[in-house]
Image 1 (spheres, rainbow, N blue to C red):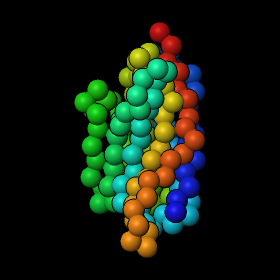
Image 2 (image 1 turned 180 degrees about the horizontal axis):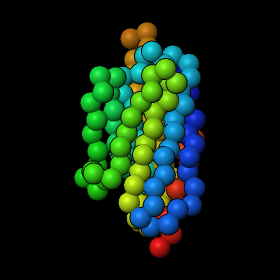
Image 3 (image 1 turned 90 degrees about the horizontal axis):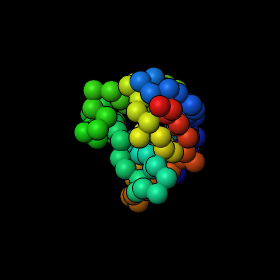
Image 4 (image 1 turned 135 degrees about the vertical axis):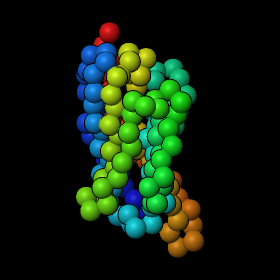
Length: 119
């Protein structure tokens, strides 16, 4: 399948920016869609942004206009550029890859990277 490693989290002031990276390895050719999720303490994991192999993107309403998801196929890496960060967006951010390998669908997760937004 696919292994994912996130990086780029950290502490930022409200209104600031961060860029998260998700490095993929393994059967990366089988990935159909890559997603970024986040989970705040005590809350359910929510989808933040998604990008398909064809380059189509989708965003949660709460981040539209502020977050940008992208993929660098040569580097086998997905990115989440976040601007205008808000304290309520403090959360663990997780990369997810979905695809199909040998006719079997899969969903792989990274270990997450923590983002803390101070007020």
